[in-house]
Picture (tube, rainbow, N blue to C red):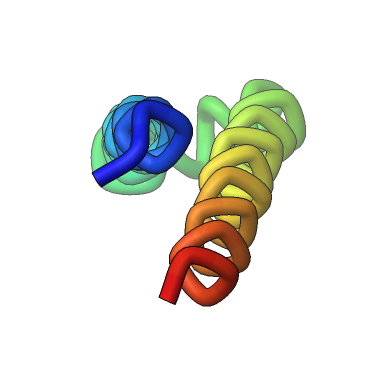
Length: 70
């Protein structure tokens, strides 16, 4: 496996972990703080969206690189 693919795989794992962590923050808000904590909802939801989008973009790069290498 090329160094580029290894680097992309590492980035996908990292961004997925960060997305999962942010999803847990959103989950905790929903489970523990709503409706009183509604003021935090938009910021946490945006951060969760951004983290998931970063994972998706990294994953798409990896898929493209794997397809190209095949």
